[in-house]
Image 1 (cartoon, rainbow, N blue to C red):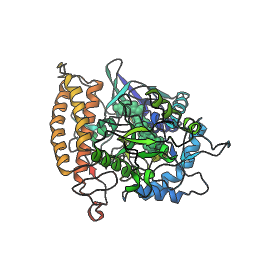
Image 2: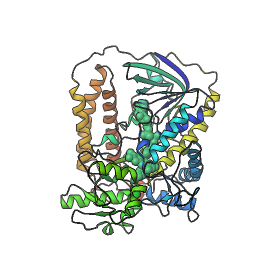
Image 3: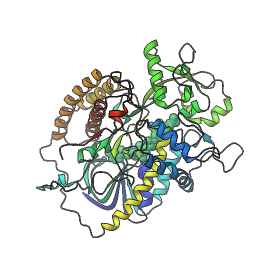
Image 4: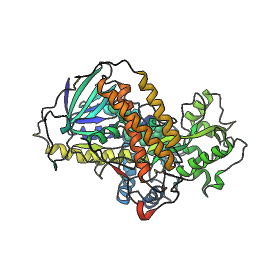
Length: 539
Ligand code: FAD
Ligand code: SIN
């Protein structure tokens, strides 16, 4: 089966949906998304969107805070453009119906939260379920457009490039071009050739490469792996952000306890009740995330305890229920009344700062392929992302990419697709060895957590490299001879992304931002004030 469209959008989080709305002004759009339309990291965002709204704040301060968190690797031009676009981005969300929380007694003034690394209150939010509200308004807005089609339960497998043309030999200086993607219709178990003049990758993050993560099951790094396989450069994947406070509970599934809880006065304590953050940073609980996560990791290794505690019992009970209804409800459902007892928390993989390299218009190294949101590496976050800067970056870059894509489409009006073959099932049959899939996935997640986690060492990284190489060979072989399924596609992507994270981490012989290696504990500006770039050799 074949579909033809002007714009193919892969992913229905804040990045993909915002872009789709804008490009639909000039052409037909197909959105493919691997589960239900709202299922995304976006849907689980709690804290909010960082943007300058207060009189005592300024773009300069937001830029400074962002670059400081980025630890020397943020791109000042990108940061300025995104920060300055912030208020407009928030306004656009308001226009599609997002009802951000207002200051007590006020009708218009946003309630501005404070989070780690921010010098001012600037986080616009909807109580503690900002992402859910944004996602649902965006899905509604997209559904009201006649020329946007959303295909749920459609999993993109691979980008279509010259590599797929039968007998075609690309000239040495010929740019790689993208003409859409092969997509698995999960219900029909059929691969569709989805041809598009312009393609946007907005597949989100890769938290599921790790055993403990705040990310939902969709976050398997598919876009990153697809772009890398197709020949687009990827960068800075060693900068994996661990959120300091995921709920520690057997049925908690690493549910996030928002940084905004610390912003409102939450205190971190050891099992003994003692506080500890004052030993690590002058801003204590509101130190940047990497500092807090490493402090907790260090305390847990020292004490042998399973978790630390986040205490809000000193705050007003009514306020807690109003400001954090989701967190209060979730904890209560597990038997923890947060107004009376501290919340058990541990760090968990949360956000990948690196990704598919993009320029200021969201263009990648592949012609007609754009990227935005968590899958992209735009230069906004550098070595560490400032809290609540991710939703902001995704909406801003959706806009930059949409503007550029609309222009691109104009140049492609007379365009015809080359003869692109349908997905081939030649040489493929069910080997009935599916147990390998669940076993390998579990193994990768475990050793990534143990060897490529918050604190790294040369030895652990080398061990991880050896293991992933063995697994990658095994999985690639399995992929070639078995029919494609959801699980195999994800496993292959998880393994590729794990390998890329390890390669970036091995390359960087220093500690900076989120990457901490005990064998290279210092920041080394002389040799490492640069991105770690990877590009696939085979095409
Ligand atoms: P996503 O929202 O993750 O969307 C990705 C989409 O791609 C999904 O629809 C997915 O199904 C689809 N997809 C993936 N692979 C495929 C494939 N192969 N084929 C088809 N579809 C595919 N950031 C902030 O700025 N503020 C916050 O308060 C905040 N809180 C957070 C809380 C949690 C619990 C988490 C997990 C993250 C939080 N973040 C926050 C980070 C932020 O939510 C994400 O970085 C952002 O939402 C990413 O948006 P996106 O559009 O790039 O990707
Ligand atoms: C949070 O609410 O703590 C998450 C904010 C973010 O990841 O930016």
